[in-house]
Amino acid sequence: MRNVIDWAKTMDAAVCVCDLKGIVTYMNDKGKIDYGSDLTGKEIFTCHPEPAKAKFKALLESGKENIYSIEKNGIKKMVYQLPVTENGACVGYAEIVKQLPGKVPHFVRK
Picture (spheres, rainbow, N blue to C red):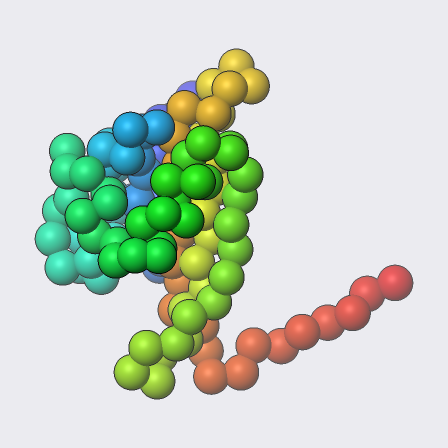
């Protein structure tokens, strides 16, 4: 079976994974480009201003997911922060950031 991180290597989204202390343990190449550097081994909190820093610390404590969208310089992105689990226990977090096209179709299905 291939490495579980392999799916992130060529993904057209920034992927960053940290442990419960907030230390970055993995970044894909897109993440390194989008964040401006390789943050592996660094504390994730140095990359976030308040109140985002406090919100992320709360996520690490809660083990819940967080999904939202942002817009910066006219570019819209979807941010998905989700717990990484081992044997049912949260051991860290993954953040996936994907640039969105101008209009995102929305379908209601029955």
